[in-house]
Image (cartoon, rainbow, N blue to C red):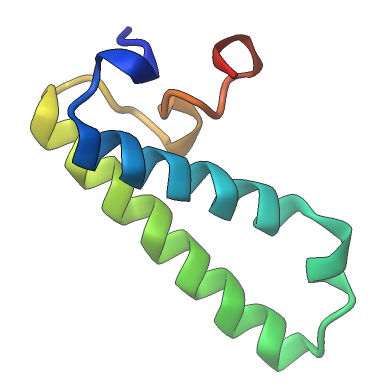
Length: 78
């Protein structure tokens, strides 16, 4: 696997945004929203994670299996 620092800048930026989206999806503050707002927010966040996945896969096809494979989401690379 690639470390985040080995990726092109635009991919690193997308991966960083995806990491933030992943943290927002799991945060407690996200859970206190109205259900309709929570659903819409979750769909937006999942879309951004998918976009980062596509950019990373374009950079190195076959590298990505799921959103947890994004560099920077693993604790060892922070």
